[in-house]
Length: 371
Ligand SMILES: *Cc1c(COP(=O)(O)O)cnc(C)c1O
Image (cartoon, rainbow, N blue to C red; front, side, top):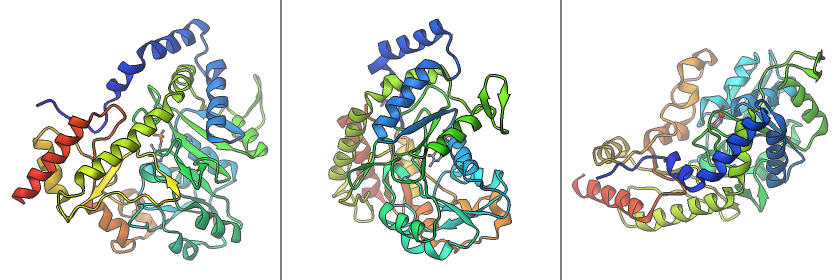
């Protein structure tokens, strides 16, 4: 039996090979390797796609989060609030800038930061709130933005997993003061290497971030502030621009696959909890995440049958060794801790086929018959 991977980037390349090859060749012919016209065109198109004024091409999503916080002046003595159920890149830049990550538990149905628990985490030192649209599911933005406005704290969306998702009909990435996207190869819109973008409607922030990504430059030999070399590669800009046109159809395929999994899984076993999508959002299923108390055994069984599943994420951030100094302990965020032991991401990518999904679900059915 052929293996079923969690994601299959080569399958996608096969469907768009001529466009990608031409985009790469064009960039080489123009020798526009850093930023350049290909990246500028992608920035324009991605800003329009997200319905935001500025998109700034960077070399990773982590760089986008770093520059977003830096542009707000976050530094020593400050606090930045986020969820503990996310990839470590969401909060790494907080620590690197000398500020303190403050964690909030999740809503166990959506796996996103729980607005009901947000306000208690706000202090006079809070400089930003970073909700994550995890698994392609928009965070509960109305409630979050209400609280943020009341306390006059800017919201930075971590949209690394949610390109094209909608919250009450509005594009993710257009809802906060800034938004950070990753184009890591496995994301819904993925480059062929590292890449990211920062989006904002704020002209001043955009100007500052364009300088920060490029050594604080105002012109070739003039540097006004201390910055970084966080620029997007021209080849990545060209590839992303070619792929952006396909994103709506790819996201639609992910949604259709999620529906099919949900239909197939509805009568497999009562212990399985399926993804929940509130009526006012349109999720883009970066991952299809179920939960079950028999997670480890099920994952092992799937692996033995050639099916790759994943855990996003097995260790909550507040329990990571790197954050020992923050003083959090097991039991502080019970919903996240329980989710971490029960969640399982099934194979999902646009090119996945119905027979593959049927085999995943039949294998799960076999497991439950014997367990
Ligand atoms: C992928 C990811 C990032 C980091 O993006 P990179 O481009 O890999 O730096 C940040 N936050 C979340 C939630 C992610 O999934």
